[in-house]
View 1 (spheres, one colour):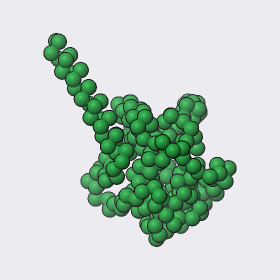
View 2 (cartoon, helix red, strand yellow):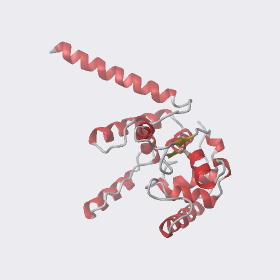
View 3 (spheres, one colour):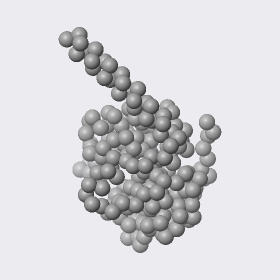
Length: 222
């Protein structure tokens, strides 16, 4: 019994060491592929993905996704408690499930975990969110998020999305175009950033207003 216990202690210890090392490594190097990309490749979905540094991604798109997905991104520690409480109350009343994942949580899920919902995955998501918030600056978290998130069916990352939807590099996206891409993030395989439906047009207008309220996007230096 003691040998089994020691085995599991060593196993969990090395799992923690390995996960920390991977997270620390990804603080600096581009992430070539995510679990979702690999799963989609098995389904014969044509993929587009091209990693670019955050300096090559329009500030308009950076701000648009923050305003659309996680307006407290710059000030929370990876978890937005107020948003979680609101989602919990909403889910008790409604039939549709409303999430409260921050950009940090979505980054942890996209880069390190599988897409299916489960308590195990949610627990690991919390763990990896803690690690990236501990070791990565906010600007790096956003950079990884914008390079790994799906922005169309098989379209991964800001550069691929900009080229696919507007035939231009991500660095050249306007406020109008950036808000269009951000507006489809809840369901990127269902919605189109260009041309837009009335529903997406409404979301786009809302995001642009939030961008005006938010003001200039600046990151604290490490």
